[in-house]
Length: 182
Image 1: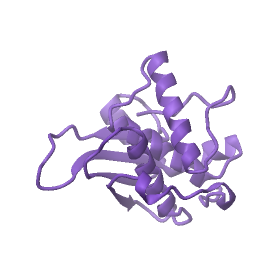
Image 2: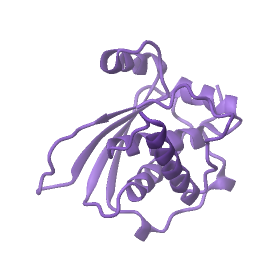
Image 3: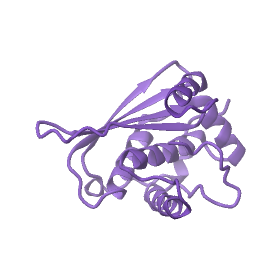
Image 4: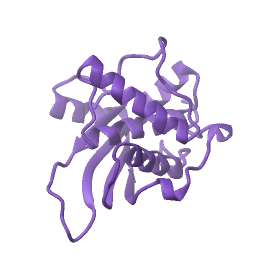
């Protein structure tokens, strides 16, 4: 499988003032994610949070880095769909607590699918994983792509967020339609 190392030539650090307070907790299941730079995923989550709302209070999100087998089980249980997908988002939907950050929910990535899709697109797997984190966090914030209009709005927002991170936009006529799941 391919490296999860992002292409360092494409990365531009966002200014800290551009990113609202978003705590990101990352859990790795297995050792197959060892090449991935967690900082890129944290920046992607924070950039999505910043780009997805005008004003935001302190919030947190958890990222689960797992494999195709586990995500296939989650996909079947929660979406009644067979097989692995690249990303799933589980929005908490709990009311805001004044005593701490708002917990948005969980974003789950499947390593084998992420690496396979990145290789098919000819991009670094870390770059693809960062895009999927942006996509997943936007779902946690209420964005969706159920209709053509919603999909267009969400894709445009993803493109703007990724551009701020120095990551090329993933949407084109050659983009694989499979897998950009919620």
